Amino acid sequence: MSNSRGNDRSPRPAAHPERPPDGAAVITRPAQAGDLDAIIAIDAEVTGIEKTDYWYELFQRYGASRTRQRLFLVAETEGAVQGFVIGEVRDWEFGSAPCGWVFGISVRPGARLAGLGTRLLGAICDGFRYAGVSQVRTLVARDNALVLSFFRSQGMMAAPVITLEKALEP
Ligand SMILES: CC(C)(COP(=O)(O)OP(=O)(O)OC[C@H]1O[C@@H](n2cnc3c(N)ncnc32)[C@H](O)[C@@H]1OP(=O)(O)O)[C@@H](O)C(=O)NCCC(=O)NCCS
Image 1 (cartoon, rainbow, N blue to C red):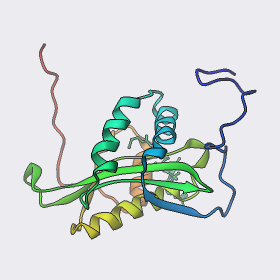
Image 2 (cartoon, rainbow, N blue to C red; image 1 turned 120 degrees about the vertical axis):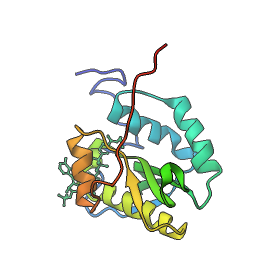
Image 3 (cartoon, rainbow, N blue to C red; image 1 turned 180 degrees about the horizontal axis):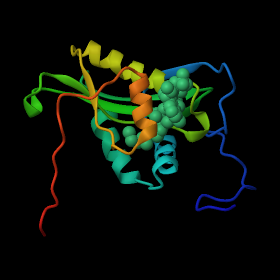
Image 4 (cartoon, protein in one colour; image 1 turned 90 degrees about the vertical axis):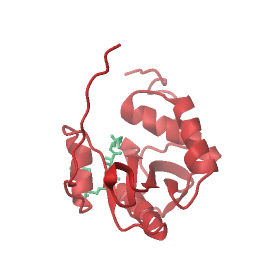
């Protein structure tokens, strides 16, 4: 079957091996500018939307000018980026004590169920601890059973807050 990124006969890009070999060493480290193509490709594969400008802007804020509070990490095996996590410590917003927020986590579909998501979440939680907070939060769509199962498997529970929203009239 063909798709917008080519067909099955295309040579597989070296940066995206179909599956990391079993037992391949996993490295989690801060994202670098050279990782952006792989990050954009993973996000596009997962969400179906390529958001190049968004990721470059996010990298400026969380990668290039990272602080203890802002974390943008990747997991790589054998030199290939397989997933990423991004988050930030937010102070006192919404009446809440300083807390680490995970804004996004994604593992390339071909590399899932091998512990990479667990490694990424563990690494960002280490960063949050280093930044001095003892709580981590995220937001998950109610119907996203996969992401809910993942976070639940990591010990995360419903928080004592709710999200409110309304459509803005034009
Ligand atoms: C959620 C996600 C990051 C998990 O990555 P992963 O590398 O597969 O996670 P792990 O291998 O560390 O899995 C840890 C646990 O999560 C749970 N889990 C992971 N995938 C699951 C699935 N498909 N169904 C049910 N539970 C699942 C399991 O409890 C698993 O532990 P187990 O393997 O011992 O059963 C990955 O599936 C993903 O990127 N999903 C899309 C994320 C997304 O939509 N991001 C944008 C919004 S944040």
